[in-house]
Length: 162
Image (cartoon, rainbow, N blue to C red):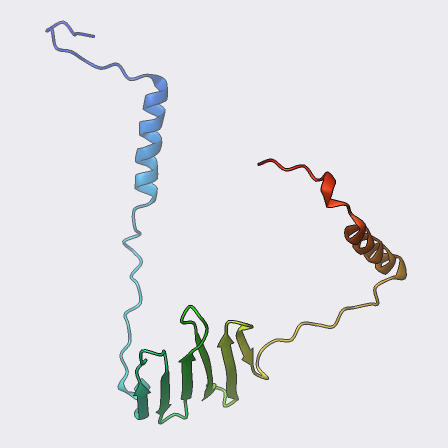
């Protein structure tokens, strides 16, 4: 469209005007609040803890490694691993112990391997509640019937979508 001076102008439809307005509104709403200042990072030297021991054996070609780490506040980390398995998987075992700020001791022992994955052990880990009731006999009978049907199923009638 041209105006009276012969200059081309663009007419915006109502939908286009709505989209532009919504985009500008979203941009204004996303603007950071200048009245809020993020808390400054505190660097108190009393929070620094001396490292008493840091013994590391870096991974060998076979995947063997170890780490023994201890700090002045009693935090201890001990971990070792070795290559096992055909794909070079590394089995790891270790312990972590420290004291919570309230004085409670924490200890975690763990193993990570191809058979069981990560297996932590600690008194601090939550334990799932016991099942609240016995499973009724009719449910057990239905499960047994379904298993029997699966065993007796004739797979020759199965249709394939290949």
